[in-house]
Amino acid sequence: MRKGDKFIIILAIILIGYLYNITGFYHGIAQEARIITPGQKDIIIPLTRNASFTVEGPLGNSIIVVENGKARFTRSPCRGQQCVRSGWLERNGTFAACLPNRVSLFLNDPEQTYDTINF
Image 1 (cartoon, one colour):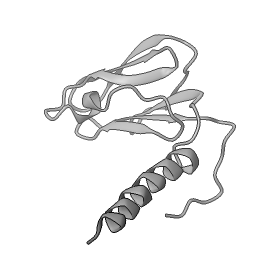
Image 2 (cartoon, helix red, strand yellow):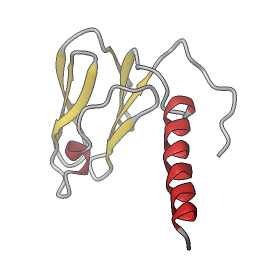
Image 3 (cartoon, one colour):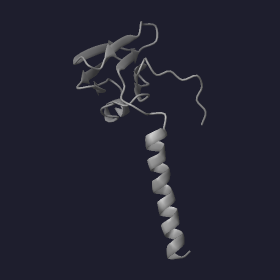
């Protein structure tokens, strides 16, 4: 493989990442957060309102914080803590879930709807 081949491959990888970022499914800033737990009514929170929510799941309480247009899990009773490690969410279509505790956090824009999505 020559230097030119390596350059083209690196350029293609950068271009694909850039194009996915500007045209991908996670496009735009979300307007609301939806907390989903089976057997309970969904909690819908506008991201313009700073708040903290304690959501009860089968393992215990998960704490979700909404602040400055972003939302995140700050505490959960699960062992792996992947939901907490996912950090702040702000883009449309992003989500975090505590699967052992059966609590999900989904960010969306109610004005933006999709008829179908194909990958």
